[in-house]
Image (cartoon, rainbow, N blue to C red; front, side, top):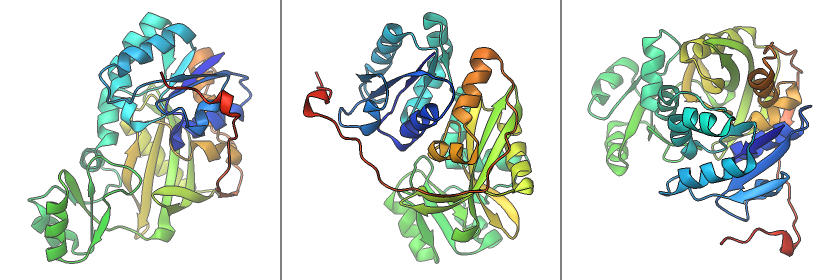
Length: 323
């Protein structure tokens, strides 16, 4: 079995590679990244340099690597590749007899845009965060008051995120950056969770919920224990979303109600630690796709996960040289 992971320099891509290495698949791992100094590029058996996903020849170069390597599975390791891979999934699978773990363009678009996420959840009657776009802020303030959150509709790692406590600061925040969404400030740092789901054919087959602590927008401490009510809530959301394989739901409890503020239609940054709790979503998805092995809810371990820095050390002669 051969698995090709792009974005090996990203937290997501590295998490997928770690999950593969801690699986029982025995897969040959092929990696790719634009930067020859990305640590994860050297965690597989073979490595390739690809242009940035925004480059005009990205898709052509991606197809060239897939044609050369002929992997059984292709997994995108960055958000910026998702739209291109989703739009071209069927052609890639047909032309190279492979499988791309990527959801439909519709799912990717909903998950990529915080406003579309909130509207999707609201329309489905799920736990959404009351939100609006600039121009409708007075109605939202009348409904929920201050504080509010302002953040980019498309973004990650809390970049551009701000807590707003009065109208003057709200107006400044709206003018400081384009394409923002305005949302109710829900819950607290102590009631924030991240969840992973596996869905095929519109049915969520397995899920994991972890309470988390954040640093710079990423999970750096995670805690698992039985969260049966919260698992049911994210499984209901996963059924409605209909992702192909993995999805990630981030939410806070607001007066006991789980309010989802972000969806990622992909594996997530915590994929690389969930296997410690007995939830290796990468392995489960691959086994289902390649062999038809049913995805079943694993028995999860009650663990505390503390993330930390580590090192990848290379001989200078082993560093890939960009052409």
